[in-house]
Image 1 (cartoon, rainbow, N blue to C red):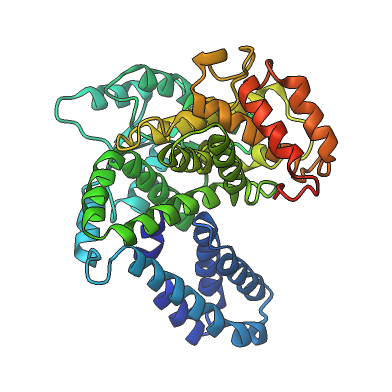
Image 2 (image 1 turned 180 degrees about the vertical axis):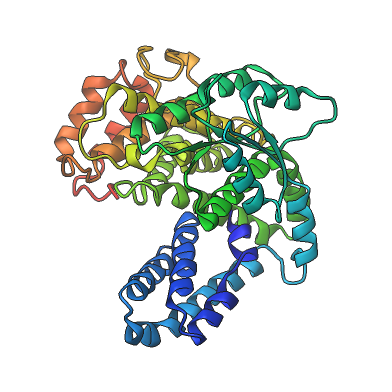
Length: 443
């Protein structure tokens, strides 16, 4: 995601539209930078882009003239820093190589409306290889053909014979097709449809009528995310070999990359800024008090940073809802545990890295989720993350309450020892609280 931000820099185009005083296209491009910068944790750059977008909307040329160059310098600086961090000075793919890669990407569009198929072909055909199917049955036949290779499926929800939910159910039940990412196409503006779609396994939604720039960006983002997961094991091996030659640089890069991933997830949830770093810190303290080795402490810190990475797959409308969640919405929230484990499971160079993501909401008494395991069935690192996560939740401001008093936090660990928490790690947390009379440990 970070590499894609640099390789798809829009600075030259933005400069062109700025010089031409073309505020319409200028606004579209800075809007794009606002979103992509936020996705990699570059919050100040995202805020600059947002301010310029609003100025372009209101034709405030004076504000743009006063602030454009500062924005351009910040944008240039962050792309250069990313390039330096990844050692990409002269190793970027050139335009021809990128075009070849895109053209070798096969997208199947499934829709029973011929006009929608023609529009999708027209919008996407210059960049990708497009196949079409007019029904779910035709799509399944095409996907089952020998030699067929499909990288992404754009699937209409409302079709006459089988709707999109029927088709995606068949796809997920077929081991050869279940990993192909699916984006739903819909004219609906219904939160329940989105909720059900994500539960069924869709990666995203594209609204009809199609908006070309948004359509291309969403497709590009999902393709990049899928490639990242598919090739993650190979990439970790490659980076490990490179780390042997340039160990110090790559160790710093690894820490910063994991932190960027954690910040990218937290950028989706306005109430959890810094949450993953704090949980990782508390988990390391508990592991140290428990007598674990330096290596184990380092491992649990990384696991703590990534424990909520599955929230990247939760709709913003559910994640940032301030009122009480419905049962259906809470079911969607709970899937962040399994989504996170799926994202992390291919990192074979660090066995167990998915433990915190999958099991940090399990309870010692077996009443947690997603698997309802209990006691020592829950991996030790996950039991520690559970305690650290609960401490940060109680000592941080939430939409529905302020930070809890320290004595109430302590009382909760006493009360829930042996039910929600492993007594061993609950006792360590109580000891840490007792050694912090001025309540400085909280973030």
